[in-house]
Image (tube, rainbow over all chains, first blue to last red; front, side, top):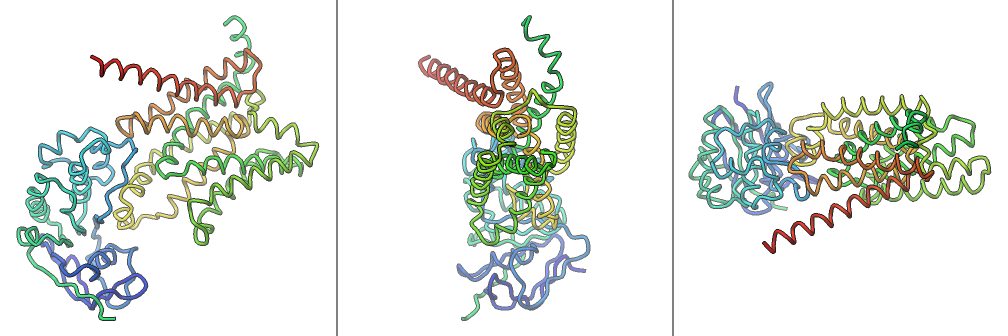
Length: 191
Length: 272
């Protein structure tokens, strides 16, 4: 059985925001969702994560026992919170193995004392390396510094190589080309 | 010191009750800070005080009335959030608790003294029930936060990921609210409203500012609270002062003294 099967899904908050979509995702596969702003890509991810957006039509089928990791565009609100990078990773069960040297070096410092790029990379890593079979990533390249952005495609491929299926939303066409197996166009509803 | 030790032998039960609360409240305060719910501490405490006074008027044990009122506040949070902006709910409940407390104190002669004691803190009258309650609350808090604390952190920092785990979000939040409400109600009975608030607010606030990690904050906040509490207990006992204000003063003075030392230190380091 596929990790994820989506059949004629129309999701939204008060009403469907995108046209019905059908697709499937296997373990080890990376699928990019593309489309204009407001097409409903983030809404679709929220619906796939469960407990977020409303499913108006269609069906989401997950393989039994699938664990989901979900990263939104909102950075963790760590300003003023005494939390180290290592502690953030421990919260999601993510392992630091494989972190780039720059991120490893600041693992034991408070997150709110790090640069925005370092903080964002650790926040992304905490979801990317969480013990999950299905990873839903919304604009994972946002706010990363140059080193983080350069290592992201390799980190995504490595995670897929470990058997995770990844659905990501990204406006970065280069990132999608570099690491995604398929691209799915999300189109907004007409009305 | 020669005066203090015999008094401590006499007041060991209140001393221990306060010490247990000084360890308990800052730990809860760290999670209230994290959830940006400072006002919850005041609301639980003040409404708990009103409940205790109401219970006295009805001839019910005040501890039961205080607990019931604080737990009712915790229970009202979620229904009220559906109809009112969440940021104003605890301030509103605090105002209502304050109003009820003062009206009860003003209009019922029998509860006037108890009302004053609840505002000032009546730690020296803590009995076996209070000590047992504080010990149970500390044990419950330690067990709950050991197990659920990381999930509370995850729910605040990665809420979408937390929901995707299909964990009982509402139950975890409500469990913490009930624990905080019950602990505050107990604390108010012995430390007073503002004394309890000082312990739940100041040490966690300082730990948030200076601790290098959450683990360190969990050690620093109770240690600071216990230190300030010990000073306040000794001073209030020796000089026959109301405990709550002395505790608040001790915490405030330590904070300002620490800030002055840090400013001097940093100034010196910059000159070098």
